[in-house]
Image 1 (tube, rainbow, N blue to C red):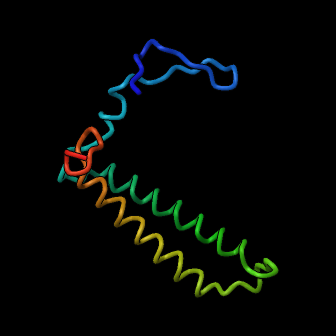
Image 2 (spheres, rainbow, N blue to C red; image 1 turned 60 degrees about the vertical axis):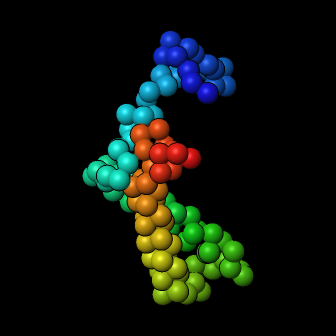
Length: 106
């Protein structure tokens, strides 16, 4: 749904100005190209995914004792998730156009 720049909405009774419809498109790079900002965004996505997996892994253990956590296995899991998330996000950014369509069609 596209909004004009002058349209407003309220978020819990606070007036919030919505960005114009072209705002998202200016943040995207061209298809089949990677910019430095894409690498930073993918790195941030990978870091957040790894942090969430680490928290979920520690929280779901029996007893939830920080001193009983297998830190080597957790570090291995976090590293694998971080690398996988980074590669997946770079692949998505590499294969989408400025409108966010996969291969320019979907």
